[in-house]
Length: 114
Image (tube, rainbow, N blue to C red; front, side):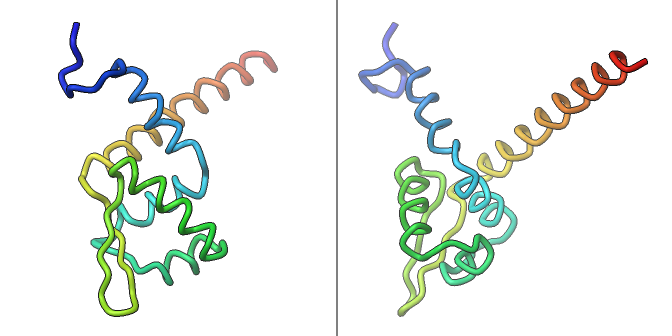
């Protein structure tokens, strides 16, 4: 069956690559920040994420490549924002899955110790 996006590779491979882009704590933190504010400057990201500018730049490039964030230069400042509300929704769903998983693990631990 042809891919509806016209891509040569199967959709599950494209999804796997998206999850690879999300598979770094710094990138997840960046997405958390940009999804809770209309836009954020690179200098604010550097302060919040607490990494060197060159490393932040590499992480932002990955997120841009996967269309998760977009940037706008104004003078000497660059501002980032999430490309879509789906980024926020993805973070909310992943948090809910994590909470459910932790609750399940805690229930198993409680059962094992009783």
